Length: 142
Image (tube, rainbow, N blue to C red; front, side, top):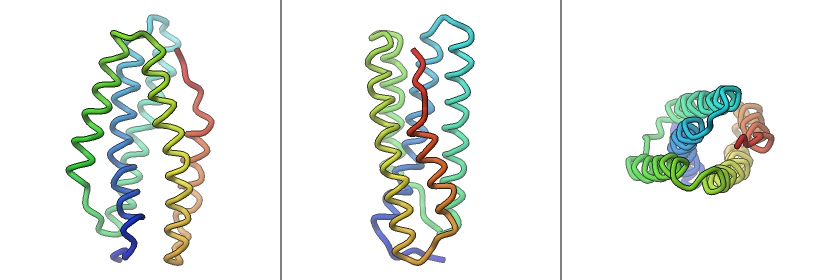
C-alpha cells in the first residue's frame, strides 16, 4: 500500500535516520564513561535505538517508503559528531543533545500516530505510543 501523506513519509524517513544518530551518540557516551554499570546501561539504550531503527524500517517497507539518502547522511554526521564530542566535551554536551533528540522523537512519534489516523490506519498506534513513552522515560546516564 502506498501512502499519500508527505508529512508522514518524511516523518518516518527522519525517524529511521535519527535512530542511527541516537545509536551513534550512545556509542560515544558509553565509550566516554568509566563505570562498567553505566557502560552496560548506556549500551542497552544503544541496542534499543538499533532495534527501533529496524522496526521503523519494517513500517516503511510495508508502505514502500524509500530510505532518504539525505537524512541518512545528515543524521550520520550528527550522530558521529555527538559521539565524538563525548570524548572532548565531557558529559554535558552529549547529555544535552541526547535529551534534545529524544524529546523531539517523543513528539514525532505522536505526530506519526496522528498522520496515520488521518489515513484511517490505526495498526501502528500501539508501537508508536510505546516508542514515544520509552523516549519520554529514558533516564540519561552520565
